[in-house]
Image 1 (cartoon, helix red, strand yellow):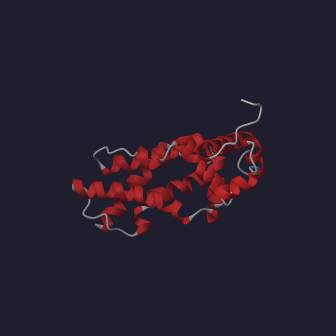
Image 2 (tube, helix red, strand yellow):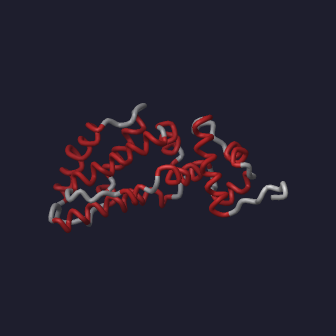
Image 3 (cartoon, one colour):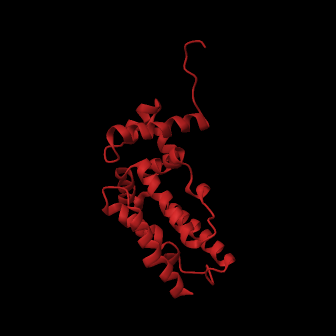
Length: 188
């Protein structure tokens, strides 16, 4: 090495930036997170960040799976719709613990700045669970209105906004047993 720093590109640069996001979040929190701060910590220019992510909400959203993995890759097939939905909700709560409620609330407050496709992820995950349940004969159809499919995720997001602490498991059971499963039966 000649003393000159090698210019990072591609995956290496992106990994450094996404690591810097978490370091900044740990130090300053979501409310004080800036593109400039992340760029300085990653030892790059903020224009490099803006070429990839148009705002901090998109930057943090990109950093989440870098830290916690993709939720869709962690789906369990328990053999029962109730247990499958609870498993997904528990994964969401675990992510809230790992990411922190401050970050979750900040992202939800800036949801209007996120690519609308991000909200389709939970629909696709829950639709997969419903299709499995149809194949097992638990429910007659997965052809349901989008809002019906995503009810458990929406109710959990609401709980996350209201709670300072990670959502209790009893709340997840209530979402599934008291709301979602009766709703699905009503649409059957």
